[in-house]
Image 1 (cartoon, rainbow, N blue to C red):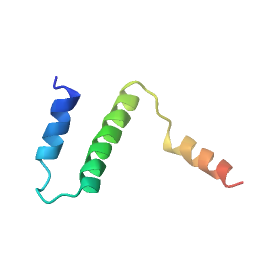
Image 2: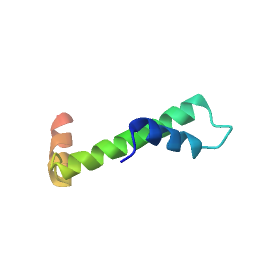
Image 3: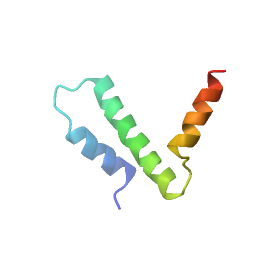
Image 4: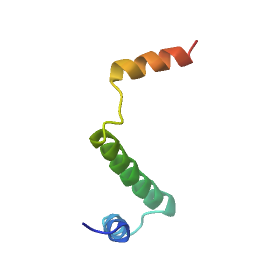
Length: 61
């Protein structure tokens, strides 16, 4: 398993040389969100689309 630093280096190295600071940060944040979502799913910390739809409808009231 690679370290967080190794993963960050790999993401940065895969980006175009002319990437902006904001673009690089976006890529790093995206990777973090995907990893967190996959871990949540693995740990069964998710809800169904139907339950989420119901919650959203309650917000609109």
